[in-house]
Length: 238
Image (cartoon, rainbow, N blue to C red; front, top):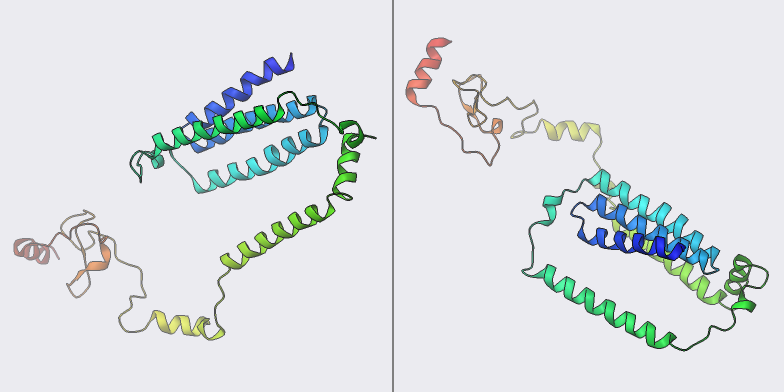
């Protein structure tokens, strides 16, 4: 009964994850699928893997993924432009082919076979049995996996860390001298349209000596030059 209730929910979550245009909605659909899988594991006499599925993958990894998405901010319009032509169709075809190949392989490997050794592995409880196997028969693989994860974490920290030489670090005095060096503009930029005949963002501001300030307008906008008549009118108003 539980399977017939949660199986459609898991399938709907998987389809919603692929179909949803918003990345946050896609992650929430995936959470629904993961919760359903966790319940399936518990029903199959695997409470440890079921709780790991719910607590670690759903409660920790997916929530962290959601926090990153909400901090960075992604919109549906970000995925409308395809970098490679036909990549969506190719991805769908390859995904369906891989799913069929994997499903057929699992079916052929498990057809007509009876699981053995579950009673001995779960003797005294599922959690106790997994702990006993991890720290006895599979201790080398367990420690090797832990070493690989630590190495990957340290490698990520090293790649993200930017080391600067001591002579490259500038103190407050050096920063102040660089700011007021010839060619720099230490003060705030004048707003567009200041001392001009128009308040348009494309109208450059005028400096106190009458020159136009190129720093007052963005580089992507065409600068609107004042005509001689407008300049004369501006001088009359002053």
